[in-house]
Image (tube, rainbow, N blue to C red; front, side):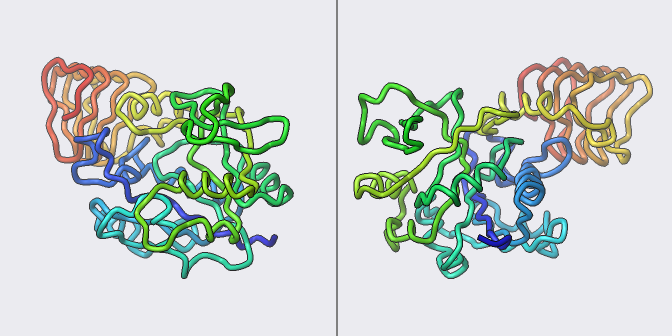
Length: 311
């Protein structure tokens, strides 16, 4: 396998559990430390695998992607967007991009709403050397231990209890998987359905659907606000300039902790206290306000004592 692997980023979800944060944005474009969540996926794939060719499927607020990436590039990599007027689910999304997918090389699928730094290099090598039709990247812990994985053979034997409900040892699917072109025969053309059904069909047919267990580093699914806010702590390893925009207007008498993020053009009033909160670009926090685990969206104004809410 060469270095031409393509990456399909799943960006079409509605993000209903994150509302109102996703009211006017697709979930992968919600700002995390003042940049779109999906850029962490791009960086991970570029840095680990050298990927330079991305396709993102879109549905909710597709115009937001054009605003975020007007020249359809990121760090020199090509970005293509494929709109789904009707949500096609994961297998349908892959079916919809068959014309873009390689005929002779594996590609990688990556959920656009996850945040992780696990090693993709080792996962790719495992997939290529295994001969698997698909290889799911797994973790031992998580909120949804749904994948039956046989560590002795390296094979996935069940998903969601559909084939082996008695299989006791379960793993968390990370939302990252490597796919060989031969797997596409298990994706039914024109169907709106989950790729889980395709994995199950391949397993039932005796094909090799593998797993790669990676418990290193961090992994989070930013599906709801708690995990979104927890990501501030998870990512708080860089410099303050990543976290607090130099284009924010922060009163000298305002105070904030070491994890909160403040976006460009945000206005933080005198005496405001900010704790574990995300203040988006162009948002305002009124003088004397106290915010604890609060998200203030672009253009919104927050005032008073606020806790665990979105403005």
